[in-house]
Image (cartoon, rainbow over all chains, first blue to last red; front, side):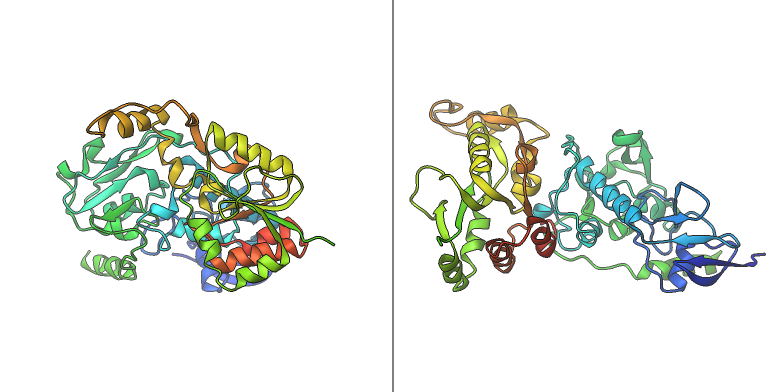
Length: 236
Length: 179
């Protein structure tokens, strides 16, 4: 049984269920915290560190999407320090792979690009890594372009939690980490993929896309995901 | 009092940013009235002059010649604007970085041509190992992103700099997005 907790977010007194996250409590009270790996309908993993907040009494920054509320907690969602960290987090996502917005299928429909604009990121202070990365076009309908992947793992989670195929997973560590299908086999030869396309729909960048999609072409948005999750819950 | 000196230069880019500059239509007359355009692809000057107030640098730094030019521009310019995504991030020209210049030259000049296949070595500058943004080599004062930046933002940027506004506040005022 969850209980009620009272806490402060940006000086505002709010109440939340004891099993809710700071992000959830903030959203219910119309306090906006930027997110990237979070997606309503999927579990939270705290991969992108964009939703970091300050919690009084701890020097560490906490990911709002994976930290549950506590009684008397005092949370700050915006400060110079937080903005600087968020900007640096986005910058690191950019320099780690080859994000060439101008020639990307997700140009103007990309959450990474939009976040960069929102935090005023207009150049990179960190050196660009320019890794040589593969593009897996072996699937009949879809493409996985590792150059644009930010390892948010939305595709992994939607495939596991909603479609329940678990075709995707993460292999390797650090900058060598990659999204892999079926233990590293080409996507096209996957025996678990149902070709449902949910991973393509939830991808925030141009890493997963439908074949034939051209640069800057908008894709269908994904309000259907919470709906699918509710249907699934009813079936159980 | 003489007018401020404005220059533009085209390095490793497609000239799209210069096209967008021209796309400001009649506002270009205002710019022409406010500043002397002393160097650039639109001007018949051979040497980059001394004492330039504002220079728009289009393109990344991809060759030894780009590097020589951008260093000269930096020495002779008060406010240097990284003009468009190639100058700011490397953009499309930097797509070659993961494979290196040798692989690019071999593909283009040895594998693809149907006759007289050879890598040009005379009268052309050497490609650098990596195609990098301008600020990887010289300090940049204003970043004007976009592929290309819109004519309105170019005008806004140039106008504010000619008005003597500080580069940092101009950078913030014209901030937009990549791509």
